[in-house]
Amino acid sequence: MAEKCLSFDGIDDYVNCGNDNSLRGTAAFTVEAWIYDKGSDTEGYNAIIAKNPKLWTQSDAEWILAARLLSDGRRGIYWAVRNQDNDGGERAMWLGNSSCINQWLYICAIFDNGWLYLYVNNDLKDSKNTGFTGINPGNKNVYIAKKGYLNDYFYGYVDEVRISSKARTTEEISAIWNGGNGVQFEVDANTVALWHLNEGSGSTIYDETDNDNDGTIYGATWADGYDFLTSHPTSSDAGSGLDASALSEVFFSADSGVGLGALAALLAAINTSEVSSGCDRLRAKIESATAGGDMKLPPGGQASIPSRKVSI
Ligand SMILES: [Ca+2]
Ligand SMILES: [Ca+2]
Image (cartoon, rainbow, N blue to C red; front, side, top):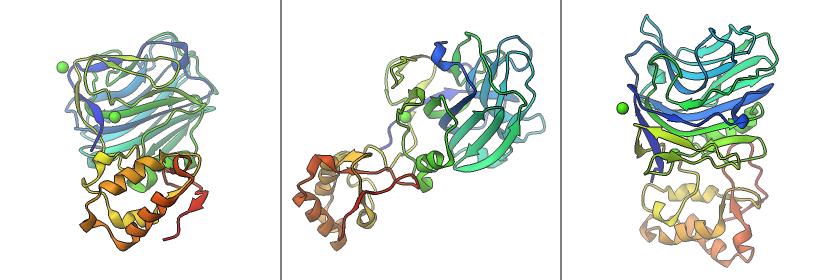
């Protein structure tokens, strides 16, 4: 079952995530999001997430990740950073046109010592050298779905957003993409803000980090989000499309993912008529395992090195 996301109307809905110092850019930072762009008809920079974007006309530094609609009708994902000296000028952009809209996308936008990198669904779509090595944004707010100035709002769903104080690596990006079975972001030492947008009610989105960059919702409504099949499975997921044969490929690791207990409960809840002989043996292996709660399911992807493979 999909967890929640926020739905933005492209007219005036947004989230204000405040202006804490932790949200300022540095020599290297990364902005990631899972989005579903419904394709606004408004030409402009329909911001997915942005800090202070007036775009090249003021004294504070700024950055913006946006769903761009050009005057000629082409669409793209747009990533730009400008420094406080108004030196910026380079933007990374992927013109995916119909590929940009009406489907879930994992976007990873990186600023790394002057270089912009834009990844969509694990593919590097563009890179540019800005010519400056760091930025020092002022105290303007970070907004989700709002550009900050002018009436450029994002139209569609935003499911997860993470800001990090480093350039995320290709291995990390691959692990999140996970071959198309995306996993939710997690807080680590370089996470400065993480919003799962799973609250499902109310007008606040909570930052998972200790920085408490909680956001206030204006107008946006709750909806079902991207189906993160490989993260946080619970027994309630059983029977909703779980591929029993895929479970024969399960690996166990001691350092990441969900607990063995949750997986065992999930397996136990599967209709026995759907369970292959391989899974029967796997279930027996799990239920007889003494390591119990210490064994965990890794999130998958290239970054996952299983510490133990269960033989079935
Ligand atoms: Ca509205
Ligand atoms: Ca979510």
